[in-house]
Image (cartoon, rainbow, N blue to C red; front, side):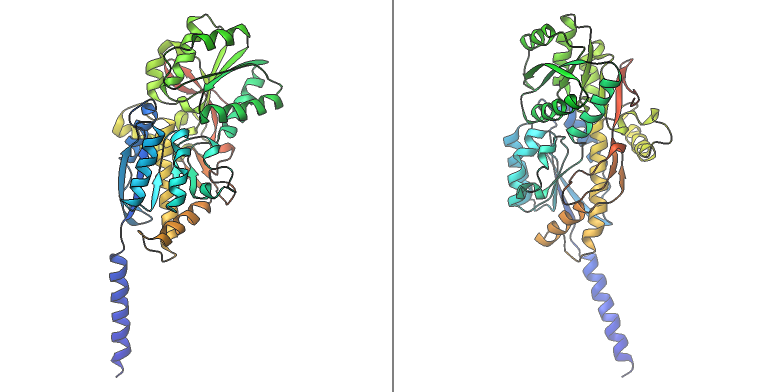
Length: 388
């Protein structure tokens, strides 16, 4: 009789171990743009995703990777497929603002958290919108980058600025944030133009910009399409400073732009210029760990903003999964997806290659000033320009 409680204890322990061992893989659906106009952004993301560890929160993970061709309709199809057919617990991606915004309905209907790799704050704001309750994102908000950009312009004698941006949600978001902060910094915006990611000529827009004779011009685009306005400005003899957004930090931008983009100033995440940051920078150590790992696989000077964001996404999911699993919810269930959403929203002091994340119910991005620096293209490479 005295041995019976011991047998029960051993049996309970065995059942617990069996239950833990039988826990399903955490399934992650990934949608990126490895073809189309945004391929220069999507390919570094994919390169990093192929480096992701095989676990999340200590539990085995399974990744399903799809390409949306930079097309919003394709992105929505992919996201719906990942949720309904692949039964994923969380989505990573899409890469660009139009595809990410187009996917909001699908993730909300599927009650599946999405960690976007696109920049616009419109992906996650306002949080009063039920769809955006399921949306999070890695890149810095446009307002965050516009703040350091306008400060840098003001500190370097810029008085008048011309603006040319994508004619989509990315360009509109940048216009909204930049124009607001330009007014605060007493920068006069003297021209406002738009162009398409697929345009082959922007001569008309550039002529209008140059007619306004601004001290500087901001190109609010991302990836290789952002080269076209700057190249055309150079061909037309523009002598002022050209600024770009953090969306240009890809090596394809440097390759396509060549000498035409030399001297470009842009806000960026710390990972892009990690080697040149002072040792005291709070993100440098983590950024350099990723740079070293990435360059060992893909070669020297191969890291981009978007590669860093994709590695940060794995760190974010790893941290959230560890806490979600502690709730007892099982991967593959509605309860686990909800637990992941809640864990993402309560991320605290997580240092990733592009900043330090502190999320809450009102902020599904979570970066502060530690996530941004000013960069410059110097001798065909991305370099640290300082922040003053």
